[in-house]
Length: 265
Image (cartoon, rainbow, N blue to C red):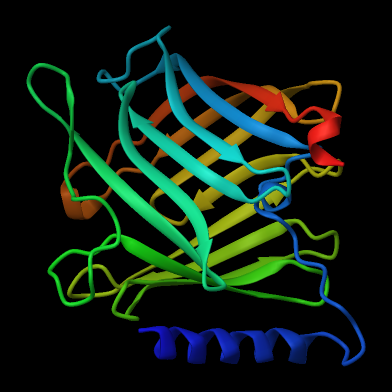
């Protein structure tokens, strides 16, 4: 596995340096900067509250957690919790070992008494077992430090997904093309991003699947948004005999905790 991953890592790094001028040092963006965050962000908690919907299954007026993520002082992700219907769905922990960026994933399921049960054993299972959730992430960057390739491999060195990311002249993300190999037939998906003149995200869309439009931003003193509105459209699909578009409007609230200055410098 190590030899296989080292080969891939070397090829991708060579490709990244080929993009940049020979004498130019690539200053890579951190995870926090890639997410559009400003300043020494330690922790984020994201909540969403539906304000209107034509989908009867949506509960209006209930604020629910969507995700919580933690960074180190350099802006690298340490942990991400994702939620569904207000309950923990998945925990991903990030760490670096032998120069490789690893993400260890715990999936959870909800049992009848609303308790959470871990679906997989702890990480570090050896290659060859049926399920292994230690995943290595390999990145490539362009000359501006934008992350342009993100490849995820399992403990056996097999590619689980690969994404190619495009940016505009301002360094704002415009497109993410991804291929996922978790199933017998690979899934391909392309997500488009649009921003306003100030660089705020105003739309995310995937053709024939969904379109989310963002507006009414509010910001904290550092310049990070802490509240915004979303008009979310999920398009009906002929293949599922459900052609009705489901439109829901949300308010998103983001709580941000920063590192003290003394912890950063």
